[in-house]
Length: 448
Ligand code: GLN
Image (cartoon, rainbow, N blue to C red; front, top):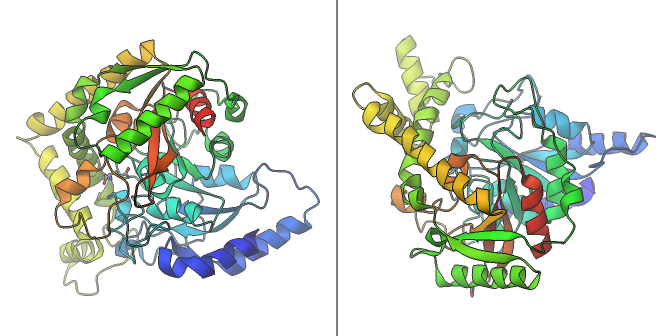
């Protein structure tokens, strides 16, 4: 399997650019060692996997797709999710491309050659986990790990026609995930099928004493929830999720999906998430504020590339950051620093925190009466490379349907639900209650 994975990588990755770092020798060595092992246990035994490059891997380069971390070749430890995976014996074949520090929706913010959509390389794969989605879609690996702060697993999954799950905040340990916005970040699996996805989440989920925000809540056997039975499932469809801005093809695909659910015995009703119109501004204020603090550690001393042109210490900090970070990362740091500065804190950051609570309450209210919320993952299918790069705000609008889920902290999955006229995949989003990934998987699996 690992050999075949590398064969496929050699065939397609020159066009797709899903990988930033590959170590064929190490991967084959690991596969051979597994082969010799008498004990062939482990639910992921020998399965080729890819890891997003903001998840630290011992002795394997971890760059977050940033030139600033270009030489971060040997992290000292594995992230908890990697440790948990390793216990089930998969083979990590390499590290996957992304938008720099997970800031972006198209992979065009990668500090390296951006990933392309395997369905049509004129189009973006989505982001920031574009490499993770593309690698699975292109058959380079059987599963990958991504991270989702405002849609970065679900949006690329939708654009690349694969299954991507953002678990409940606190479900999966963030220890070893390079922090972007710590109150929103979650790691999750990208796979071809819902069943594979449930299997991988079962392995990586669970409490971790190394992450104080990871929840001590029992992890159910998600695969046991895949019964195919959605009779009497109560589905809520927010009218804001099918409003203007969502393309006709996407709306049609979602309406068709709802018919499938009806035929399976589920019922659906239109509901409202009245504060979702504030989600985008709330998210960009909060996530940039957290990012401005989290990225302070990249100073050219502790990690990564140090500027060669510095005259003194202060100059070294400034030049290392100025030379190492890309434009989008700088934009977010400036926005976040501004929103947190005295005089603006109350007007921006504090207000955004209050609106976040209102958004969360909207979800709580709906999920009291319904089992899941269903809608599109993205307003349109994958756009063309370069189409949205001139205006950051149009790029941000891409996340309008995924961001509220992160602000609320609930789990959400994207599954393929059709194709556009141009032959690009369309994603259906299924959102559930806190720590109820089982119902999300059950609903997604029945549709699939
Ligand atoms: N596209 C969003 C952003 O740029 C989401 C990123 C993410 O989920 N990591 O912030």
